[in-house]
Image (cartoon, rainbow, N blue to C red; front, side, top):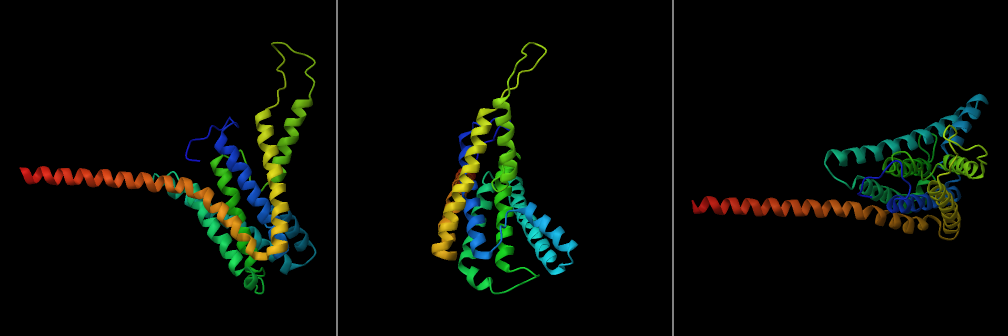
Amino acid sequence: MTRLLDRGRFNDRVLRQLGWSMAFIAGAINAGGFLAVHRYTSHVSGVVSGMADAWAMGEVRLALSLLVMLCCFIGGAMHSTWLILWARRQRLRGGYGVSMMEEAALLLLFGLLGAGLSLHKGLFTPPTVMLLCFIMGMHNTIVTKLSGGLLRSTHMTGIATDIGIELAKMSYYNRQQGPRVQAVRANRSKFRVYSLILLSFFAGGVVGALGFKHLGFGFTLPLALLLFLLGLRPAWYDVKLRWRWWRIRLAAAKAQSGALRRT
């Protein structure tokens, strides 16, 4: 994750691994979270549609509840972006890792306090739902920023659309070929990446649903641990660089001090 990613290429190993890993976690949180809080917290299209329906039917309280969910998702995306931009300003390469590790901490908080928080309501919406929406906003932003907008870890509508586009290109018959007619060619690497992300999201959903069904909020512990480990590598890389830089500065200061004493 510390390398620059080519926006036009989908064969980068790190990008593929991060894409399916984050999609798996997103599927687990989304499906498992539904069993825990009875809401799909990453389905923003459904939230906005439900808000419009509730407003049209005069169900103001429900509309406000869905509006809070939308604002929490947007807030999570903003917060994750702030972390990444701050890290870049500080010349750190692990901004994405820091965001993942903070998301892991919030997910762990959800698991530890979820049972108690689900009994309370704030701003028309249970705090558990608000927290999960915030987490999912952070989650989707990490992959989106890292891939330059090419990938999403929670937005399977766009992933399925891109799969359909590539399938259409694969099945298109290029009857006329020549210098004036550009042949239709599918991006098979892109198709494989998107297919893997979709399957990973589905697999994560199955695992998450089973995990929350049998373990309840405690299932967030392995998910938080996986997120933490994903973010630890780039963050640790920055720690090593800073430590090395500090040792060089310290050695230079000692050498300069010794030279001044000799003179």
